Image (cartoon, rainbow, N blue to C red; front, top):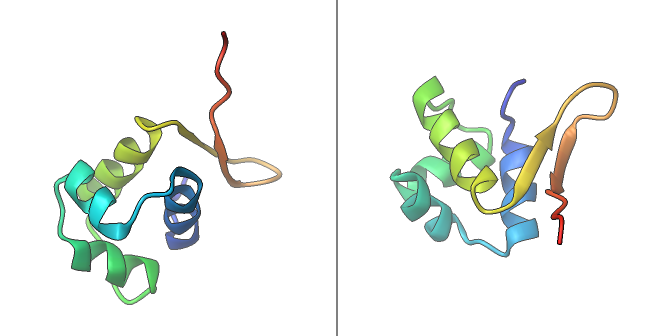
Length: 77
């Protein structure tokens, strides 16, 4: 599954995270996220994985298939 700028931005929105919050969580610069979400850069695969992992660790789930997107992970109580 390709980690797209729209999915990154959507996941941040669901989690109420700023670009700075995600940058800190993923260990990258805020500018890296800013340029990626604007479609002005293509970060390395390692950086994309770090961004995706940071978001997933906070409760989002990236889905693929017939309806690709992002959603909050269901919790079982």
